[in-house]
Length: 139
Image (cartoon, rainbow, N blue to C red; front, side, top):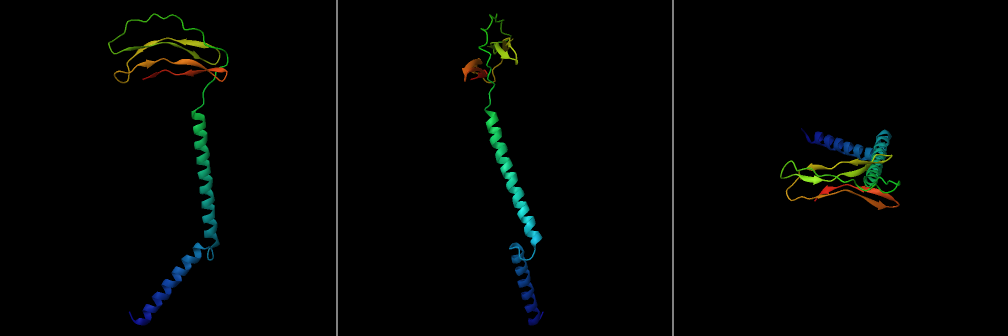
């Protein structure tokens, strides 16, 4: 390659750099800019949709069913049968609301998920003028 050929390559490289600089500044290709702006707009819409969906999910995660028909009746007397094994713990029955009336769910024996766990029974709690079921759990 001679010295005159080297000059051609430098000019060609300068033209390529100039082309890409103009393309990104929307001087050469308007369709490129339009596509870029559409992609940015779509990305913003997607981001706002995700933020709104997350906010909606968090808000509904704390929703509770409030029953406004009065307190549940007192629990019936239950005879606790003999435990089927040494590790079994009695989980007492409770009233469940089925949409119309309270229905009694009988007690049962269960094995704790870990040793030394204690069953804390569920209960109906008066809140905001109605009753809310607080489920039982192992502690």
